[in-house]
Image (cartoon, rainbow, N blue to C red; front, side, top):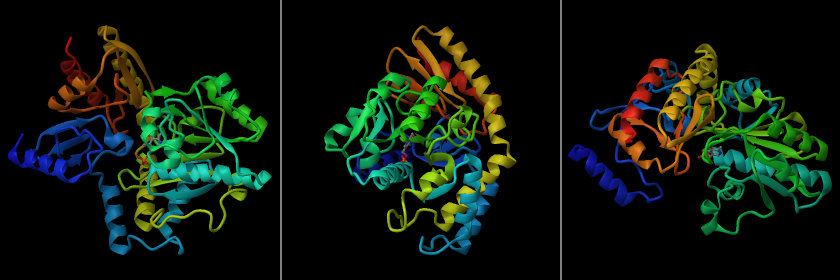
Length: 398
Ligand SMILES: *Cc1c(COP(=O)(O)O)cnc(C)c1O
């Protein structure tokens, strides 16, 4: 490592709050599916900024759209209309089949808004303020208080108790355990369509359709968190579109702006008419012209570049290659996932493998201690998969 890179890392460790154990590289620029550190070393990126940079780095049309918008105006205020946000809303409605959009600046904020909308819906229905929300064990919904309150990882919550009240937890993919938590006060069930941070667990068809039927029966709102698994990653624009279900409220972020910090929660017209109204919710930045321009261009490029077709083609190849690796090494006990969101579960911690891969020029990340997560840009090719597999194998010590 150069002195220059080393001294930046030392400065970072002095100045930034130490909330991350960072890998020992300073990333400097990106091109396509590759990132480069300050010393010019090249890395194949199978993390994409945790599912953000779906289109790959340095996409000219995307960059130009942002530059044009910067030259016009970056920010106005939500007290006025702006064309990029209006265009973005139209396109995200079309992509999702939902009816009403609220733009946020992050995933966690999208979850916050979704929870508020659900509580308001129930409040308008019966005037009570003691409604309950059911969330899933091993879920992840973000680090703010509301989002953390529905995150099914006690370790993340413990030091920050008390959480927001009236949250109950059930087991993902276990319909009976969800039914056991339902009471007259239940106003919403929130879950990821594919659990990401919790270990790459896709919802089963029986489970998600069963939860939908349960919600219909009891007038409970189904909130699907598509922040990680959405935006084409599973081979569908939103992962729930694979099933015979539609959420009442959904959240999206990460790849939505491909790097510009944006998120959104969306709802059906029915919920839109009976939940958050003027004065109930707000944000200074959410859906500003720069954010709107990013979302608008991202959704355009998804169509023009046939991103979803590429995901379907390359992900079946990725699954095949990962299955071969799984069969080859005794330490690998499972391969699971959906589309270009895959996990390899080992019988031991994977930190050493990830560090070794980094040394060998491959960026990977974990999901839990024993699972390597594969969440590459959605524009990868089969030959990128081959390159990743060969570096991965070189990084697994047997
Ligand atoms: C990343 C993530 C979030 C939180 O998004 P932030 O932008 O980090 O606040 C919420 N839900 C899921 C499923 C995520 O993967």
